[in-house]
Image: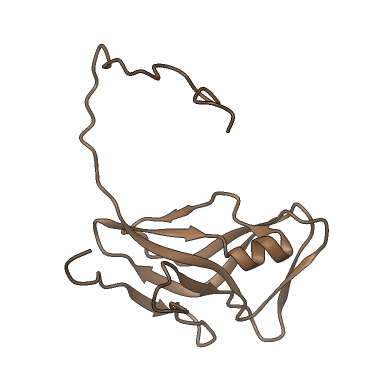
Length: 152
């Protein structure tokens, strides 16, 4: 990809907040950490959905979005995922970044302060010109929906 990296501005809403960071040079996403009060934890019971605060507000550049994705380690080791994966953060949102998480496992999971709970990928987006038409062009697939292209 050519060109300069987009500027991603972060405002700490809490002194305890952790600024997002890429863990390796080749990482696509930067880690988002839970920001909880001193000695506070959040226990997610099986099937429970909760909003985990990050203590951050962000400014994503126009023409980009933030895609909030599950961390593979939390999902495979503990069954923790995102109910709306990937979640989208629009470039004009300026409120606190909170991450919706769900416990898919059969055991309670404890979220502690500083836990890396999700990852954030900054990705380009395009606004499409919407055109209302009377007919659409034909394709080989046509109206075939779920499973129409095969089972494997």
